[in-house]
Image: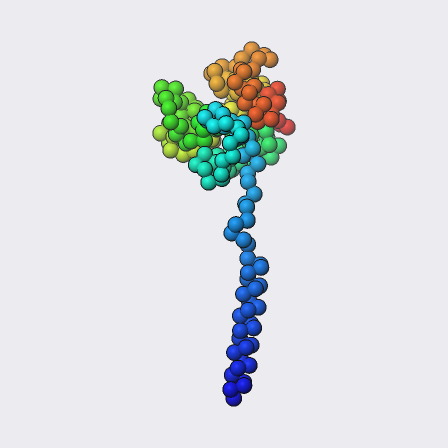
Length: 204
């Protein structure tokens, strides 16, 4: 009788050990790195404008990296609403403007153009771009700020005939003369890796 009990206990232990090792080697490791949003590489050349040398290695847990990563994810979500052929063009552009205009903050600290500029993309009169998007709402919601910024960039690019001209108008308020692009916009397009002479909706 005792022998049977011992054998039964050994069988239970064997089953438990088998299940334990199956779980151990099949479960995902918590320490494994998650794939990063490819837009994050754009952040590195902008570090100097944020008071940090480009050579600095910031950990993923650094507040700037956390904010930049979540902003990159927001940009992907917003630009995925565009036709597929336009996403690869406007995704890096929107991210660069979010970094440069508002440091990826929903409500960037500072003057905000004496109160006239709103949100992460520092847009003026956002309610004229998206009905109901008041400055107060845009400053409280980064995704809404990105939607307003993208819509305004598309609107100006369509009106001015090219992405470079449209983004220049985004900054100045009017279409530039043909062939001219604001230097600030040239720098941002270079950072985004986009040709400013492209039409407003590439592939359209």
